[in-house]
Amino acid sequence: MYVCLCHGVTDSEIESAIDAGAHSMKKLSQELNVGSQCGKCCQCTKKVLNSRLMQISEAEAAVA
Image 1 (cartoon, helix red, strand yellow):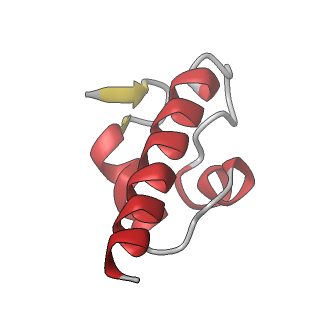
Image 2 (cartoon, rainbow, N blue to C red):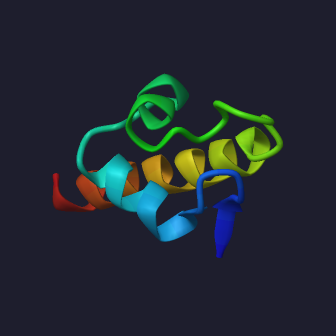
């Protein structure tokens, strides 16, 4: 699904950037330009970020 219409960024692209180490809105904005134009995508981007970070945290806890 498209999260940022201004720059054509999808939730999958955001998740890939998070997996590659972009663990903050600032990093996601630098890498994908989300939230840098109209800002309407910020709330949805934060939800994707928090959800993915939770998945990563749970996966790491399961391994430990």
